[in-house]
Amino acid sequence: MDNVRLTKRIEFSASHRYHNPQWDEARNRAVFGACNRPAGHGHNYLLDVTIRGAVSPDTGMVVNLFDLKQILLQVLMEFDHKHLNLDTPYFKNIIPTTENIASVLWSLLATRPEISTLESIRLYEEDDLYAEVNQDLIDQGAALITRGYHFSSAHRVSADRVGEAENQRLFGNCHSASLHGHNYDLSVTVGGPIDPESGMVTDITALDHLVQSHVLARFDARNLNEDELFSKAPSTGENLSRSIWGLLTGQVAAGRLEKIGISETPERLFEYCGERSEVEHQLFNK
Image (cartoon, rainbow, N blue to C red; front, side, top):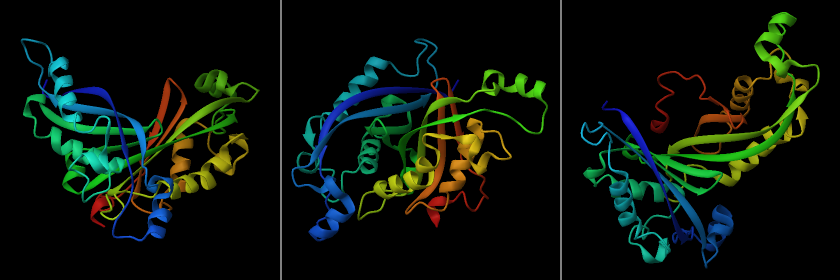
């Protein structure tokens, strides 16, 4: 039982400002927008810390959760209710973006062997934006950044290659004569090196525009069955996630598209990571 994973979530509050002193004011405003305002801004951060280890035969635990919480609180004392640019030593030379904050927290927690093996860190800046790091990513100066979106669409699930009875068996009420709809949750994950000048893996504003123009404008408040992407394929969550990958792959301004997630209902999540060659999997060495 050496590979049991445990995740602990903890919250802290902090403020920060995105600013590169090597750039002029115009470039800082163009790259960082409102995040560059001199006063800074704040977040209620959520930190998910995942550890891996063997289960103790005495306690039945990988680590005592009370002890883990105390360690996390000790580490976060330097960050909680602080202005990260001004009150901590970690962001004198790097910008306190979500990616960089997650990397700094990794460096601090990785020195605490009493919490077992650190597996990954996920830091939520907002409900729909989080960064994730693990040892492989840290070794490459890289991170994953995930942005969430929402759209509403109607569909009727039907497979042309099988008969009516089989369609009914496969899809049940989703194959009824009338359309039905979902409030879809879409997550787009981009991975790559953390740019030393901006502190970011990718330009989130550019990603928002890309998703809006290529995905949301196409699917929101629409009947998926009328889209040419589903003229020969059932409009399942699996095919929808794969289709969105096709619309976005190769279009991201920086970094590389890593994963598309589609949640059709709270009980169903579909993820698609593309099909790549072994060379293409070396995404951070391009």
